[in-house]
Length: 294
Image 1 (tube, rainbow, N blue to C red):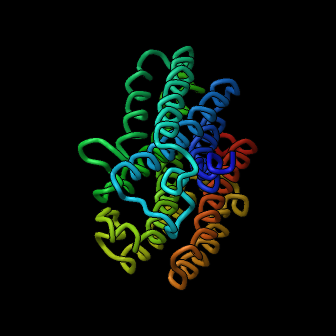
Image 2: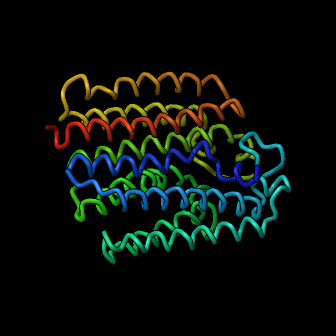
């Protein structure tokens, strides 16, 4: 089981959990918490991310973009621990399971969720394959902001409220979540710079260079802190200042990013992911105590 667990990339799974927790925080803020669709959304998001990770491993191997002994996490297919066909079957089996989970949300969200679910499934594959793989052409960061930020936050809130409530709180939480999730990807691609460049995989780090993307990491985190501060501005002073703690951690991580490279960045990848998750928990707690700022 070890190669399969490694292929799931557990260190990054808090990213998908955070989007659902952030959306639930917004639902709680608007007095609309509903545990059942929230749990389904959580399972859906985690399975979708694992399916995307499996697809990334399979298609990067198939397209010759992985090599043995890479700087990043061990790739089971490339190293021969998992057969390519087994990984392909696992990818599409998980997508089928996720489709069934997604259909169950129609009870709360209506049939209009169908195109949303289809878009998520397409993204899970299009990130690594298709006529124009997003992660190979510098579009992965934008896609992550959308599908790990705005989509999970807005639609997790929607299935709990039964309606869209896109006020400044929801938009800021979605934006902050997406920006912090993009920073996880930046660390991942920063670490893999040499390997990706060697095989012609044009991530944003390969296109713009390490120095520019380190700055992007810095400014994305600062922008996320601003969004967190705005979202929490309605709660009492002091309790709503959690963005300060986030910013201190982020600046520390930025310093670490500039000073390290290669496998040394695996630790930063994990902590950037966990920091996003902790921010989502913070928002859920303060909105539970002060719904609508009261």
